Each structure stands twice: as C-alpha cells, then as structure tokens.
Image (cartoon, rainbow, N blue to C red; front, top):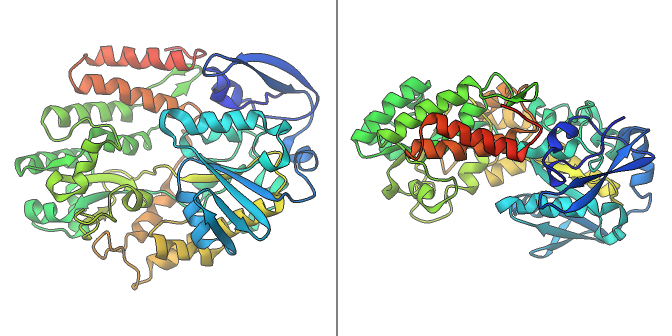
Length: 474
C-alpha cells in the first residue's frame, strides 16, 4: 500500500512518507498536521497506479478555456512570452494562447510563501472549478521530490504524452531530479544549471597580472589553491568572495553521502571541509558571512565592492548580478568565468503538469516546445544568455565562434558549462536536502561569527533539523 502525499506542506514527517510513493483508488483518511498546525487530511490509496489509471479520471477530454500556471518569479513567464509560438501578453498576470486565457499566479519564495500557496491550492484541486484548477506548476531542485513523489503531478510520458525519443537530448540529471521513487518522470526543464566561478577581470589583472580564464583557473584549481589566492587578494584589498555562503553549493554538490542514512542525520566530509575552509576565510577577513541576496552581499556586483568572485550557473550572472544596471561590473562586461575548484550545479526550474488539469493538450505542447524544440532553445541561448536543456543545441553554440557573452567580456563559456552538465551526479540527492542545507548554513553562521564553538553550532543544527523532521535522530 502506497502513500499519497504532498510532503512538508502537510506535516513535519513528510519526507519519509513521501519516499513511499503514490497511488490512486479507494481511500481511507489519515489526520495529520499542516506546517502551521492545522488539521488536514491525506488520502491513502489501496489500488492502482497513477501512470496507469489517472489520465482518464484526472484530466478532461475537453480542453479548458483557462490555463493556470503557478510559479515564484517572472523567469518562466518571460521565457513563454518571448519564445512560445502564438503567446500574447495581455497584462502582467494574464496572457492568451489562441482562445485559451493564461493566468499566472506568481508568489515569491520568501518565507516558503510559494510552496505554501501552491500546497493549499493543490489540496483543493479535486474540488476546484475547472477555470481555477492548476494546470502547470513549477518546482526547484531542492524540493522537487516533495511533489514528484505524489499523485499531484502527472507522468510526462504516460499522462501528458511526450515520448522518450523527444526527451533523449536532455541532460540526464535534469530528468533524474524529477523522477519519482517508481522511476516515473514527472517534470521537464528548458534549462540546465551547471555552475562556474565568475571573477572580476579588473581585479585579476591588478592582482594576478592577467584576466585570461586559462590562467585564472590555475589560481582556483582546488580549494587549497583557492584559499592561498584568497590571502593574496586580501593583501590587495579584495575579498575572495562576498560571503562564505557563495561556495556552499559547490561543496554540497560534491558530497559522497546523503544527508540522512538509516534515519540518522549524516554530515558529509565535504560539508565539514566547507566549515573548516569558511572559518579560516572569515577569521582572516577574506570573506564575510552575508546572507545571499542581501544588500551587503550584492555590493561586489560593482567595482567599489572589491569582491573578486562569485559562484553560480548561467542564470545567476544574467538574473542576479545587476548586469543591466549601469556602473555594474556585468554591465561593462567585466566578469570572466572559470570552472573553479569543483564542478557543481545550482537550481533550475522544472515544469510539472498538475493532476486534474483540463488542458493536457496545451500542457503537452508547452513542455514539448519549451524543452525539446531545438530552435526555440537556441533562441533562448542567444537572446537570454541562458544554458538550455539540449545537448545538441549547447554543443552547437559552444562551437559557434560568433557567440559570446557580453557580460563575460566576450568570452564563450558554453563548452565549460557543457562539460560540467555531463558530470553532474545526483546519486546523493534526497528529499531532506532543502531543510538540512538551510539549517546547516544557519547554524554554522553562529560559529563563523564567533557566537558559539563548533560543537555548539552542530548542536543547533541537529536540534533544528529534528524539529523540522521529527522522524530523524542524530
């Protein structure tokens, strides 16, 4: 018997149950608590398989007149507006595709607001009027399993109708992230997110005597070398990175074990290396402890911020580094890109079809056009400087001598991104990742800033995780 769940939206014990899978059929009720303590009901199935049965009973044969899309920012909306054939923008939250009205429900992710709003809507999905049912919703890598391991997401092949051949050119890791515990693909993405280290070319020339990517890579080729370069940068008046949180995902993407092993919280050796290395950087004044996205952290996007480098994927340098703001380093093409100490990926956005949609045909076409149409994907690379989820498209663009990134001073980083995308290993991905990663960084900030010793920070971390996931021990 399999559980039908909607993960942490319902209760703190969601992860262990979510990994049990999903199903449909005759139901019993289990009372659980939502994250805000309210009673709700989860249905437990006794028969059937979502991919075998749900298409007929969960989707309408008559297409609906309203397509509802839930997301947390404007990125996907922009991609649809600019690249989906026939899309017409009506206003900031409404569009048209033929005679179908597209309604965008955009809720920022701050304080988990997006997931909370999505969860509440999904719980009402079965009884919602046709024009209010969710048709498409987006998820990120950190919490994708929360949704794909439930019956609230449709199978991309069996329910929505894309084929394995159409999906064959996508990077495997982008499929692994949204494959449920039964091996069923539950989402697709138009982008890949292999990461790079972006460095300040002017600072590189001043301190290291060159801004050539091949030469700069030698100064950051591994973490020990990276840390030596940090001392050199400090002497010249530059922070190596804005915050130690900038490197966290590089370390966390290169772990050799999962966050939870046999029900016990497990801290991988590479995460402890991040702690050791970060403490040295902070104590030496070579990096701060700023929260990502804060005003202090962003100062390094400008020359007067005196920051040498940041870490991120293609979307980061385009969406997050003030590249369209006059006077920024990016605006003047002042960044360069290198692989850095370790390969990694960060984020990404996946399109999921919601069970209960009455627009399966349109959902199918949006997924097909936006994630498998090589012409559209190439357009996105050229127009939006993004890295897309098509090996042929990316390999062609990597070899195209006419393509370059203005933000990166005319550099073409795509070959580096392609190599990184092929190496991404998700074997240690788990449904606990978002919560554990967040609490680990929160706890270690206390240690870095001298508010507690390492043992005290670890105790803070363990207690915070167990409070979030009571089924775990340490």
